[in-house]
Amino acid sequence: MDGLALVFLLAVVVEKVVEILKGVVYSIPFFPDKFRPLTLEVLSLAFGLLLAFQSNIDAFQLINVKLLNPMVGVGITGLVIGKGANFAHDFFHSIGKDQKTQNL
Image 1: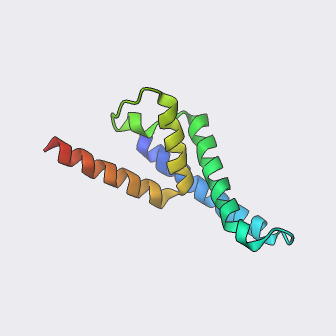
Image 2 (image 1 turned 135 degrees about the vertical axis):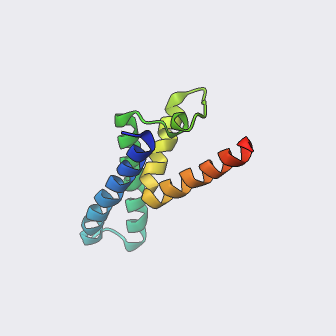
Image 3 (image 1 turned 120 degrees about the horizontal axis):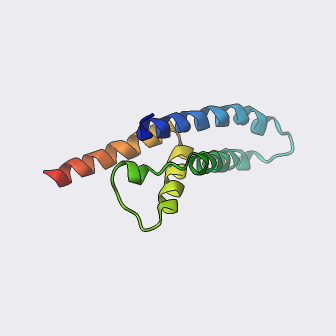
């Protein structure tokens, strides 16, 4: 499977898992309302990081950007995955634009 497609697939998986957990988080009666969105955001980022490290996917390596420590790339990829499919699309779209202008 193409690496970028895997990033998008994992981002969609995270979005759906968080959507399911949203009902659970909002149904806890003693949990303060102001912490619910933050809890979902933290869960989303945690799932994104977990999936990135488990699949060992580095988006920077996929777009031919060399980092001194490849685990940094995996971590950043996990954060991108954790923010969801729309964010992943915007991230790679902006990176692609930057690379095209540098190649001109």
